[in-house]
Each structure stands twice: as structure tokens, then as C-alpha cells.
Image 1 (cartoon, rainbow, N blue to C red):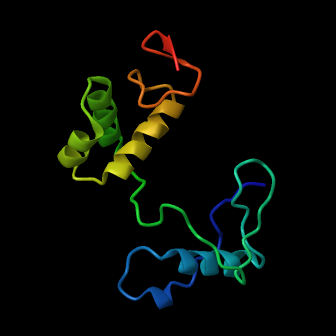
Image 2: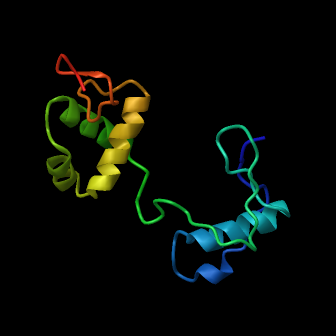
Image 3: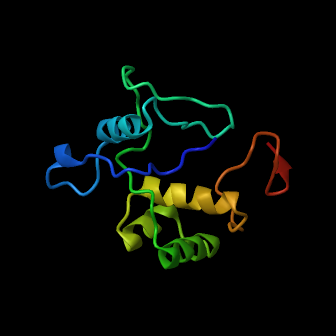
Length: 128
């Protein structure tokens, strides 16, 4: 079973004025609401996060949500030949966030200009 939002509202009293909980608070809220952790693995094999372990949430400091029109604009810019640095400045986002947006779009088949090649693939007519 994949993760689904908890039914009871989590206790956010420890968050103070912050709108978004940090990773440790998120883990604690998930654990309390599920009495045993959440399935966080996307391969289909369950991985239950034990709150007694020291977990690292990758990319926690990045904003991974994009408005649909912004994501389309980033994709159009990239496909038109605009580089990541320029797109990041235009959108006032971190370069890493722009890269992840493009990676997301590439997985959906919406990128026409490649930003990486697999070793042994044909790049500009040459095998690397």
C-alpha cells in the first residue's frame, strides 16, 4: 500500500508560526497518525520509517512545487535553448529546482532538448 494522507489532523502545536513542518516534525506527525510509520518507498516494497532512527530527507531545503503555467514556461524556455542559469534568474528559483522541474518534465516526455546523455548513447551523431 502506498502512502496516503492521514485521516486525523496531525498535531501541529510544536510548529509555532511556521506554515510548513520540518522533516523531523513531519516524520513525528506521520508516525503518530499511523502508529508505526508510513510506506515511503516507491518501488512497491514497503519501507516503514522508524522515528527512532536518524533519517535524512533529501532535497528538504528545495521548493519542489511549481504552478502549472510556471512549469510550462520553464519547459518551453529549455526546449527553446535557454540555459538553466537564465531560467533560474527569470523565475527567481534555485538552479537545482529548475533542474528538478526539467527532470520531472523529461520523465513525462515533455523535453525535446536533452540535458544529459547516457554513456554509449548517440550524442550529436557520435557514440560516447
